[in-house]
Image (cartoon, rainbow, N blue to C red; front, side, top):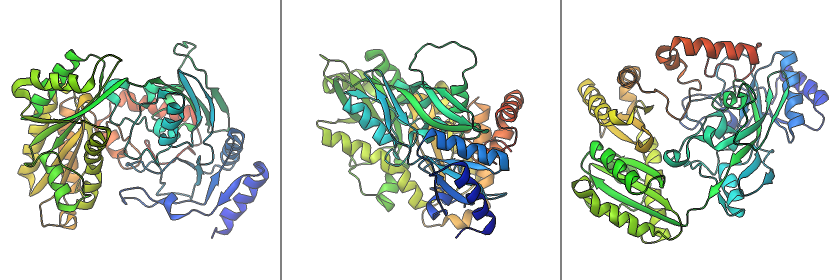
Length: 465
């Protein structure tokens, strides 16, 4: 039920934007996946055209009402939930999911399409849109761009920013930026597109995008290799890239602790090795016609020597799915255990083994913790998460979270890394940004925010205070 003030503003919106769908906020619009934040909302609006989005923004700008752009709600840093201040309008793009154009090189699609729908639209053209996330059935392409999503294929194809040629967006005052050109080269001044991508809805609302498409690999192969250490994993990556340049799609590091969590709490998945290895790599390759991927992986296994202690190469599509099911189950197992502090970090590749050793020694010295370190080691991005000791509850560590987070982030910063590799800043990492970001960068960010959103109505409280 809307309160009188919200009902009054709904009347304003109804007059300003004929036919606009408006509802009271359902719980799903006020939650984030980890249950760390609870959001506010006066009303949820669901436009069906860019013109309607512009009308909403003009009305909110005139009334100085905050707007929280909403995609699939899968973000892990709270950008999708406003927790303080006056109740905002939640602007959901879920009814804007149309494919506007597609050819062999570019897909133009509206921001409310899910990532899975985007991939399917590319596949229907016989092409590949390579961005891949565990939440792709729910995550929407506008949110993927607003957070500059990464996922498992960054090593070969890049983050969302590198997959996007243009965006259509509505700025804070309702101005429509019609930037859907399908060009690889366009050097006409400032690239506003790249400001909006990764801005987490704080500079404008992305309503559609021109996305790059790629050829489907003629031969695809997947393997799990046991490695003796993270340093050996990096040496294996270098060997794989030398043997198959430009063909390594994913290179994921998995630790024994993650496998033990799956044994402890599920979800139930097939594990390929009877004895849980300390470290293993999930490797995927995509090769051109005439080269057999299974043979290429077998050749890599033989050439690796002591870098690889054991291995399994998928012999079918079903086995490939099994391998990826294990990797994609790791975050769910983490959630069931309940982390004390989770860290989405990146460090320069050569420093990855030293970071893992130094951070693990520091965390273990600080208390009775378990560490699950896994992730996209091919691009330097680790999910370094700290958990209670077995048999103990997260609530027993209520006072430890801040201490552990600061410890890990200080070590990351010491290696010249980032305290947010792919999840963004949202609301949960605003303090971290202020602490670790370069002051010059922060000043530039605030100047850009003031220029594009002088009233501060775009996603208030996210990224910048």
